Length: 125
Image (tube, rainbow, N blue to C red; front, side, top):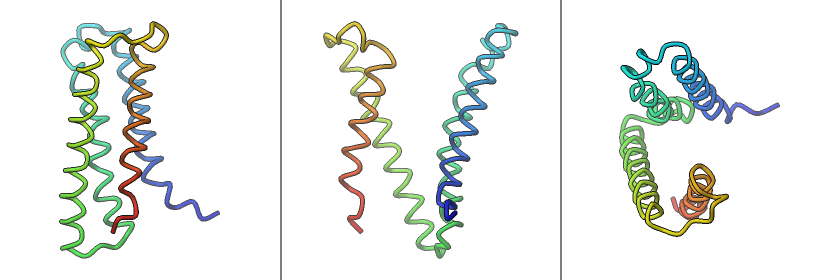
């Protein structure tokens, strides 16, 4: 069906979903273990994004130089997105957010707006 371009996205989503499921199970069944490993479980989900870069390098058959440039650009882009999201969430901590949007709702709205902003950079090369 020509859906091979979705392999990286599906891989990242599946791994992140399994990590979240594992986190919920450990939190319920073994709270002591969760308190000891809690933050490291979330880092596994973050590493899915890091693992996407070599997968995309292989999928696109990049040369060594293109792979290095792509990896550096991906790292800088990811760092920029994380810093922007963290600073916006910090700013929202002191803002007057409507009650229904507090928490995850406003985070999804922010992520959507950031993705639209970054979409403006697509196709620049």
